[in-house]
Length: 318
Image (cartoon, rainbow, N blue to C red):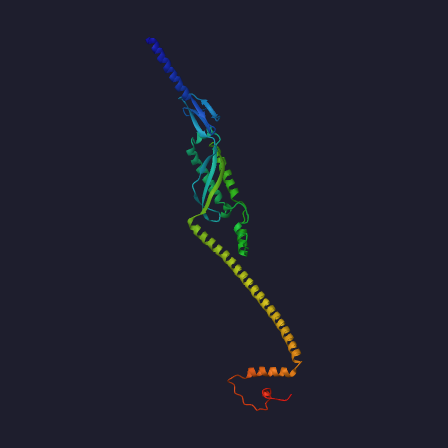
């Protein structure tokens, strides 16, 4: 019985050891991972990048995992002078991936050290290209006309300034140049630099104030130009209104005078026709009108009774 118990315990122990060793030898690889097997720090075999369950020698071999997907590098913003001596803050970012895990493990070993290598290689490339071109080349990609200038007529000075800002390289080619310069230097680390882009460009504080003041002055100049054009257009409209008003008034006065003249002529004709029937009655009515105009209750007139003026106030023979 004792022997059987010992055999049973040994079998259990062996099973446990086998299970532990089997568990220690197994490892899994996901779709976004790749594994390098090392034995006492030395590489063993090829890179394992097939997703699924894999096995290694337990205890003495170790699985080193590295990401297979795109990784992010975000550079620290730095102050860089452009070719035209304008100091700007440049903030860049990049995307990279591990293409040779064996070489990556032998050189940088982990992603933290790899990011330091990216700092050492990408930052100088960015500085080199920014200092080789003017600010306008870094900011713009093409000579496309700015939307803010669509409705503004450029003066001669502004046209000369626009000619000075002609783009020959542009931001897109600059970032492509940074990528092409930095990519070969990272291949020895088993790293492929996929893309480099400028995230943000800004003036340093000293330059920013003067730039804002210049922008304000330019906008004030444009606003003043619009105001002067508006005032000129207002004066033009006001002048046309006055001209039209005078024209309408003169034409109305002309028409009124013509109508009045025709009416007076017709009235005279009617009066003449009426008074021609009895001239003496016409003379009598006109004399009465003169009495009414010349004399009132406060008037005092001394005239001879034989005066022609009062002939209708006294009897006379027809």
